Image (cartoon, rainbow, N blue to C red; front, side, top):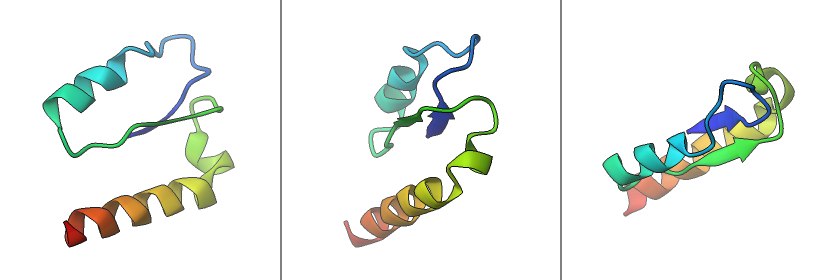
Length: 58
């Protein structure tokens, strides 16, 4: 999960629920607003790539 943490409606406790229910999940909160991908595309792409590589190898 990647999310912008500067959103008024974003509850910072919510990612813990994902983590409890999806044991192999990773959570990354970025200093951004609603359109985090527009400002952090390279960082998010690298996070996704690394996550998928780790899932596929073990």
